[in-house]
Image (tube, rainbow, N blue to C red; front, side, top):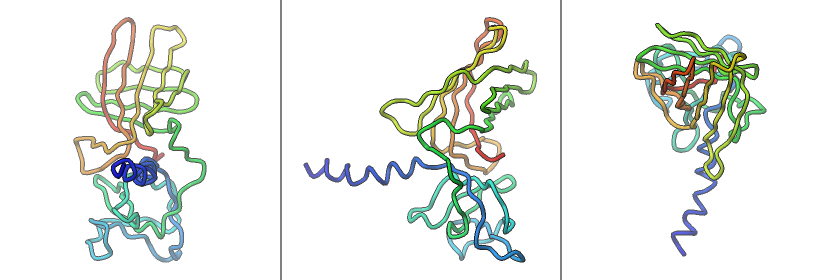
Length: 202
C-alpha cells in the first residue's frame, strides 16, 4: 500500500516532466541587457552565450531538479537559462503531436520537416520524398509518444513515424534535444528506416 501511495504522489511530477520540450519567449530583461546562457544550472557557472531581450521561440528541452533553470541550445552546444526570464508560449499541448517541427539524423545526413500541410524528407544522396500529413495519433496509456503518417499524391511514397518526448543527441554536437524520432520511408516499393532527433525551434 505504501508503494502505491508513493507512486501516486509521483504521478504529477512524472506528468510535468513530459511537458517539455516547449517554446518560450524571453521576458523581463531590460532592452539594453541580455539573458545569459551558462554552462550549468547556476548563476555561478561560466557564461557560454546570450539571448537577446526580445528573443522568441527559445526551445527549452529540460529543467534542473527544482525547475529554476532550463536547458536550451546555442550554437553547437547546450546552455542553461534562468526560467525567471523565460515565458512559455501558449497553446502547446504535450498530449498531441508537436507541429511544426524539424527532425534530422546522420549516417546518412537527412532531415524531415513536419508541418500541418505535409511532410518533406531529404538528405545527402537520398531521393527527396514529399507527402501529406494524413494521420496523427497519440499512444494510449503512455504519455509523450505520438505517431504520424503521410502518403504521396501518386501513392508510391509514404512515411510513418513515432515521436517520443525524451532526451536525444544528434551524435555530432553537444546540443541536447527533447524529442526522438523513429521514421519509416517508403518509396517505389523500397522501405528505409531512420532514427534521429527533432526540434520545435523554427
